[in-house]
Image (cartoon, rainbow, N blue to C red; front, side):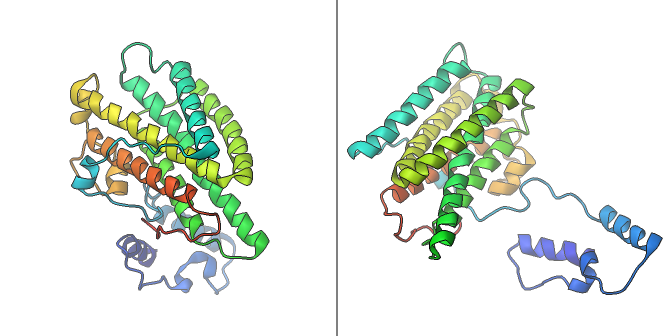
Length: 291
C-alpha cells in the first residue's frame, strides 16, 4: 500500500504523473487466494489504510490572498424587473423570518448564537449549487447536448458551502432538535428550489446572488464582533485543522482568519450567481474550474 500513499501525496501536490500499479491494488490482483490467506490480505490492507482527514479530497476552489481577504465589500445589485424583485423580496423574507425564529436578533450575540447561525445557514447554502448542477446534468443528458460548463462551477459552490459547515462543526456538536430542524428545512428547500429551477433558473441564481449578499453582511458582522464585540476570543483561538488545509492558511491561523476566508467565498458566490442569472441558460459559463 506504500505506493498508493505516495501517489495520493503527489496528487495532493498537483503531480499527476504517477499512477499506482493496478497489480498492487487488492481488488485488481490476478493470483488466486483462498480461505484464511484471503482474509489476512483484506485485514492487512484495512489496517494499512489510514482514514484521511476532512477536506483531503476536494474540488478546485479559489485560495485567497491577504489583500483579497481584507478587500471584501458589502455590495448590492439593484433588482431589475419582476424576477429580480421577486428573488430579492424572497431572500429578505427568509432572512427576517430566520432572524426571528433563531432568536439571533434578541439579546447579546455570543459564540453559541454565531455557531448555531453559521451551521444552520451553511446546511441550506449547500443546497442550491447541488440542485442546480443536478438539473443541468439531467438536462444535458435528456437533450444530448453539452452543458456549456455550468455544472462544475455549481458543484464547486455546493462543496465549498459544505466545507464551511464541516469547519464550523469542529466547534459545535448539534443537538437532536437542531438536527431535526436541518432535516425539515433541507427537505422543504430542496423541493422548492428544484421546482423553482425547472420554472426559472434566472430566478434561482438571482435568489442565490442576493442570499450571498446577505451572507457577506452576516460574516462582516461576525468580524465586527470579533474585533470589537463579544467574540474577541476568536482573535486568538486557533483555526481547526480542516480550515488550515482547505484554505491553505498559515499554521498559526485563528478563527478570525477562517471567517475572513468564508466571507471571501461568499462574496465570490455572490458575483458568480449574479453573473449566471444574467446569462441565458444556453450561454457559456465564463468561470473555469477553481475560479
